[in-house]
Length: 159
Figure (cartoon, helix red, strand yellow):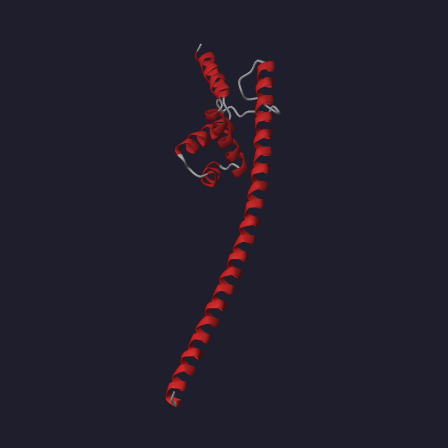
């Protein structure tokens, strides 16, 4: 073989070595990126499971509060709302308070699909308060016993 042939062979081998090294480096970089993403995904899954646990506790608490309010309302013989404290009413107020009207407006807006933050801002309520109303609506639509209770209370109101 001539010197030109050896030089050509040497350059070809050098090129293949550089290309192979770049391929190995890229493969190692991809493996590191995948491991970092897997670590982040595991952390997010853990956070999601914790959030689901906390949401379950909140939902249990809300249903317990709603059940207690129902039993208190039945015990007092009043409507579904139990007043915590009596406050003096102005003569210009009707039989129902502004809070009841806000709750009904919030329910209507939630059913229409308006965001809780927007409803809270419009009605001067807390966002958490609006979200609790939304959960109660959601629970009533998913709970056949609650739907039956609400239909009974409507039939009592119309009598």
